[in-house]
Each structure stands twice: as structure tokens, then as C-alpha cells.
Length: 427
Image 1 (cartoon, rainbow, N blue to C red):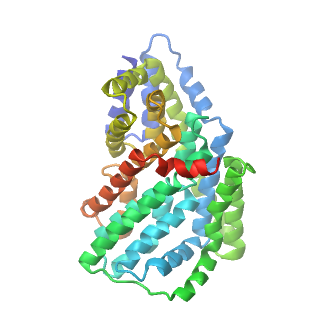
Image 2 (tube, rainbow, N blue to C red):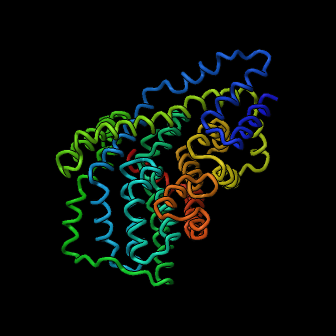
Image 3 (cartoon, rainbow, N blue to C red):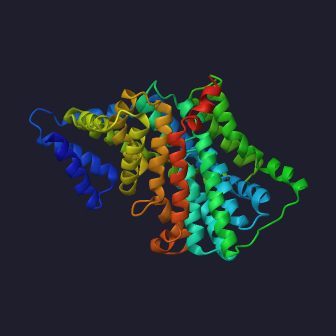
């Protein structure tokens, strides 16, 4: 009964267009209020406990670092570097968009930040060069799914904190590298095939001897992910401390290297960072109460028993969970879906011996595909706005990139080494 009230009210509120954080909080309050023994103070208590973590400080710092890099001139340098490598091929600007998104993913940790930074530059440029507006928007949206896959990644931080010792954040970061590269390559193949078929133009044939110059110009940005990973892998800093170093580094590069950051631009960047952080932390806090009530209801245990009854084969269970997550991703954003489903699914996969780092990447990758599936896919809305087209027009061009993304999901599900090889290399 408790679970039915909680889940029923949650989806009812979502259908009424209540923001997801408020929907979780209100559903939790109603479920507690209808229970005979649970005090309403539990909602406040569990929300405070859920957000009271030193490691969660990494989230605002990574958001701030990404915003500083975005405002500090790095976006243009990354686009020029990507174009120097792949602009010479048919559909060069389309390939540039995917490669630039891969590089920028190593700086922001956020798909929406990547889409906002790169979409406003590359989508109008693709339209001017004769690319279809729907194609340009759909490709950019799909490419920016890499934002939470290639480290640093805010969803991976949250997964690691939720699971604990079974999934160290640094292992999750390293585990995201190969899936992110595979996603980028698969999208580039799809974009190239379509570009050849539609005769989209090459962009710029940069002489090979000049490429080192482009690398040099973008090197300050390219070094930042290396600093983050090497510091944590080497045991020099924690993930949270690496995030603060990333902020200082981003500010230094923006002020003194590219010289596009100004003192007057810091205040708007801080405001945007505060708004982004408040949204994330609000969801995290209220999801803690939601998850606690869900656990008390016994529903996670019942779901675990049901999944376990279907099969004992780890691969079959992973495939079944993938189908469930793909459906969930259509209706929910990755962050709240993660926070709600981790307590439900982690005990199931642990019971059959599935590695929690492997599962973490599969789960995050899967739910991030939801960022490009209507009607909730936020990346579709961001990129459609820059292309000045409707969501329907963009969605018509989405299928090849959606298929490519799901194909990579299947690969990393069936072959755990695609996730676990790099973390094992640094043990």
C-alpha cells in the first residue's frame, strides 16, 4: 500500500507537469502522511542526511569548472582542433561536432552544458553550410550524450556515492573512457554515411603540418581531464579536491591564457553555477526521502525477487534491466532515475555477481540515452532551439543516432572488459 501511494502520486504529479524534484517531495510527504506510524519529520531528516556529504561538493565545483571553461574561450579552440582533424572528410562539420563534443565532455561533466556551449556555435554553422536543420540538431544532441559518460561525470559521481565501496568513483571515471570513445566513433560513422548519401560538404582541409599548432592552442583545455584523473588515480587528491583544482585551473586558463574571461563575467557564471547546483542538490535531497520510504515499503525487495525469478544468468538480467531503463529514460531524466533505481537494482545485480562498476556505466549510459528520446529528452529541446525547428522535425532525423547509441549500450553490456579494462590497468 505504501509503495502504491508513493509511486502512484509521483507519476500523477509528473503528469500534472509538476517539476520532478517537487513531485518526489510531495509524493513522499503524502505517502508518509497516509502511513499510520511514520512521522512527517522523516521527510526533512532523510533529505538533510541525503545531501549532507563532503563528496557531493564535487558537483558544484565540476559545474563551475565547466562554466568557466565555456566562458573562457575554450569552446572555439576545441572546435578548431576537431575541425583540423576531421574537417577534410565528407560531412566534415558533422564529424567535427561529434569530435568536439567528445573533447568537451572531458571538461564539463554535463550533457546540457555541452549542448549549450557547442550547439549555439555548430548548429547554425552546419545550417549555413547546407546541412539539414533537423540533421544538425539531432546529431548535436546525440553527440552531447557523451557529457556524462566521459569523465568527469556528475551522474557517475552520484552513482559512486550511492553505491559506496563497491564502485569507487575513480574506477567509474576510468570505466567511462572506452564507452565514451565507442559512442563517439559510432556516431561519426553514422554521420559520415548520411553525409556521403546526402552529399554534405567537406569543411576545411588543414595541412597535416599545421595540426600541431591547433593542438598547442587547445592544449590547455585538453590537459584538464588529465589533471583530474591523474591526481585521483595517483592518490594525490580526492575527487572533491580534484574538482576544486579544476576550478582554479579553468579560471587561470580563462583569465591569463585565452584572456576571454573578465572580472565582470564571473558574477553571471557564479549565478548560473548556483542555479545548476541548486537544481541538482534539490533533487538529490528529496530523492533521499523518496528512496527511504520506497525501501521501507518493501518494493525494492519484491522487484529483486521478481527479476531473480526470471533468470539467474547475469547477462539475461542485465538485458532485462536495460529494457526497463530504456523505458524509464523516456519519461525521466537520468539524475532522479538514478537516485530512485539504484537502491532497487544494485542488490539484484550484486546477488548474481555483476561488477558494480560495470553496472554503473551500463546504467548511466542507458539512462543518458533518455536525454535524446522524446518527450522528456532535454538535449532535443536545447538543440532544436539553436536550429530554430520543431521537436518533431528534429526527431525525424534522430533514429540513426539512436540506433548507434543503443548498439554501443549492447556492446558495453555484453563485453564488461570495455568498461573494466582501464580501471584494472591502474590498480
